[in-house]
Length: 265
Image (cartoon, rainbow, N blue to C red):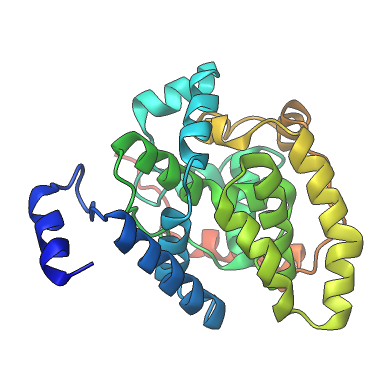
């Protein structure tokens, strides 16, 4: 396809939402291949991983949207379109929740992994605004999937979550990660992945409720164990954490001591 034809395509296609970059089929395929190569060479390139997820989504997003529409909770999510980041979620309030609640479990997970909820790239290449939101919702809930399944963010744990996501959500990106990601592991870690984590992920992910329909922000005060039972999730084999839970709790307590006390007015 000539550059003139591509320019003509861009001139007649208007963005459907802020940040939207319209692509024709050739541009989408070219970006899919290019982002796949770059993501395989450097999995830390979040922008390339995000582009690969969008350009390969295909019919999976309409299917997830339809699943959400069949669920009262999912319909409410699509109607209100909540976002998950440090601006929309009061992390300090979650930290004050009792131990055992999902909100407090999420804060503990953030403390142990050193992750923030502000690292998810905005969607650019999906034309339909509602489907673009479904993809954005998946990205922003990904860490919550780690949290509810009790996995950190090392390579083998990320792959276990990807296997879970693939059978639970059906997104091609998760399948591609599950297919090629194990090549980055040594023999011992690969054996543990396929011997312990993958069997759990396939069984649990396929039988659990579709997690895209969960309005997590309304579940912060729910007991984590009760939420897992409701969603049909059971514990995975123990994962290898970089920071022990006791160390994370000490760091959280130290941070709390350093925070200025409320001054009565």
